[in-house]
Length: 273
Ligand code: 2HA
Ligand code: ZN
Image 1 (cartoon, rainbow, N blue to C red):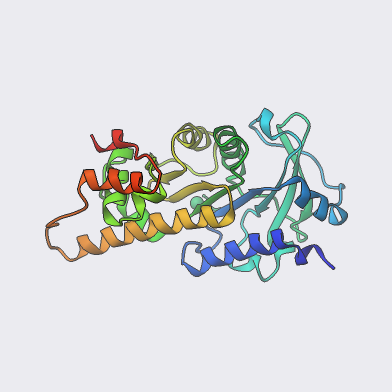
Image 2: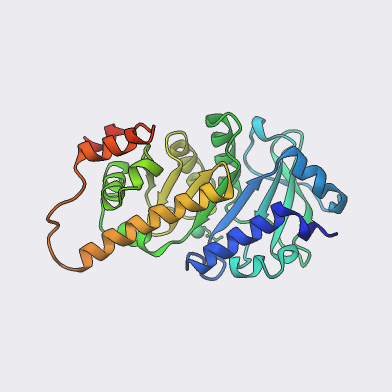
């Protein structure tokens, strides 16, 4: 038995690989974090070591004190996580104050968690509060078509939500709240973390202009599925535009609202005004 046999490690690595195979993770692009359950922490604990130093996070969250996260490593490639999880990901323990972490497993050849970990951490805090503890996954990727749309659409929730909802019938059902949009910013810093967090209170997917997409979910499948659905819808819209033909028709606003209602969801119809 090894920690690598545990389902949660396998699922984390598989999710990285699935994203890589979609073409969303060139080089070291993208990052993934998962807030572990108490049972998963217990199962992994025999493999933990406590000899690495505490590191200041630069941000603080009361509702994440003493939590454990599985996180991709900074500068590490998604394509390598499944091949060698212990070298490309880590498990972090958050301190009593909720403002620092130490690596207790993984990154055996050195390194630290993703440069976007402050953003992930604050996003987890917001989503834990918004979902009564159900949200566990934050996932960032660089899908081509959603990035392409940030060159031609106004950088507003209204513009992006409308286009994405109208391009594929699943969309008003899968993300009835719509998507948030952050203008271009330097990645990895506190400013983009704060801006993304503000939007995470309302949306579970946030577009980063000329950069990519941030999503949250209760499970790996939910977060991955949201990324995949949004990117596919963006791809359809890009293909439609690339025909050079005018758009003859799309899903009517009533249809968007009714599709969500038919599946027990409520469309954020404010965005259609
Ligand atoms: O991890 O994607 O946003 C590399 C990035 C930074
Ligand atoms: Zn990125």
